[in-house]
Image (cartoon, rainbow, N blue to C red; front, side, top):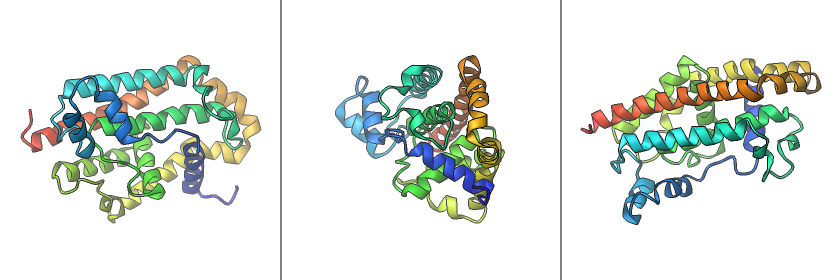
Length: 246
């Protein structure tokens, strides 16, 4: 593991968490479940086939759903109930401390759900590699990385111009954006995973378990997910204005 670059450390860590069952969110099922009590089947299909912005969903309702998603996962992230229903539990990932795996399991689910609520197309449509890139960018935003914020602003700009019904994959390969995504992975590799690979898991389990449990987990989770929500919300409002919405 000593030969891994900081960037590869992050992708190795992220890939391991992504291998947990049900960590990926089915966009159509999630949106249908969220909006079933509020809209007709035709409206729900419009949301799924296009997005919440194109379907004209009020921002107030979207914000309400976003807050509920954050609240639900925050509760699970700080409790032991999250371990149920996962074959082998989070401890099954022997290469990652269980507490850290549990935390990022919920971070990844919130990232996907908030993206879909605020109008993103299916994040899986570009394949596993693109999916990991988007998750890296989203977690970068949550962690306060300015480059990540710039990238999703660019993605939102492409969406607002309604050039694409699909994710603007080209945005990730542009010379001005793709290198930033790689830098985010490197930054996250140093910030989150380097201590795990460098010092050994056994020594870090008690420390990490103490740091991201209980009240501190709740505080950190709230700050990071709210930061991501706020970023998506601002971009959603800009898309509304660009499209002539309120």
